Image (cartoon, rainbow, N blue to C red):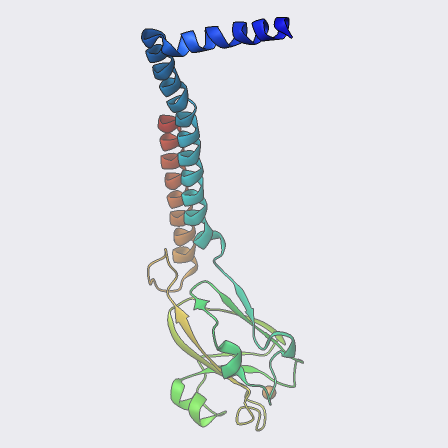
Amino acid sequence: MGVDNVQADALYIPASACLSSSPKHQTTSSFEKLTAIEPYSPMASRRMLLAVLVIVAAAAMPQSSMAADHTVGDDSGWRPDFNYIAWTDGKMFMVGDNLVFNYKQGAHNVMQVGGADYKACNTSAATINTFTSGTDVVPLNASGKRWYICGFGDHCSRGQKLVVNVMPASMSPASPPSSSSVSWNVLASYAYQIMVAAVAVTTAMIVTR
Ligand SMILES: [Cu+2]
């Protein structure tokens, strides 16, 4: 019993002496401040690095998600008695995307016509383009409205007609559709991504220093 009390006192006294000693206490508190700040700084730079990486990923995203293929009518394909107005609802058609028309070759076709001919289902209209392969990949290479109808029988009046409003691509300017301008747009987007990456790496190096 007596021995236990002595040991407890021996442990207690140095601890209280340390706390009551003001210069020692001051040193401890400033040391605590240092240790509190020191591990925070690498954490903050790590967060900054993460933020930079997120920005780079976000900047690169619209480029990589370009050139989407829209399968017209999805699994139903290109046929009469289908609501293509409902199909386009909520979809975004961008310059660089493709429309893919799937149908039995010889049973239908795809005629690109003007707005008035689309409305009137004028199958003898002067077409802008006609596609007949059955798996027609139609590039949307300029912004604005585009109208497509089927030229077979009464198919158009039975709903085999499509209108899309093509939005300009986010990075590429509204340029005339030619193969050379497309490749220049691709080059420009690559240059932009490299520039963004270079800025990100430089920022990361400054921050982590
Ligand atoms: Cu048809």
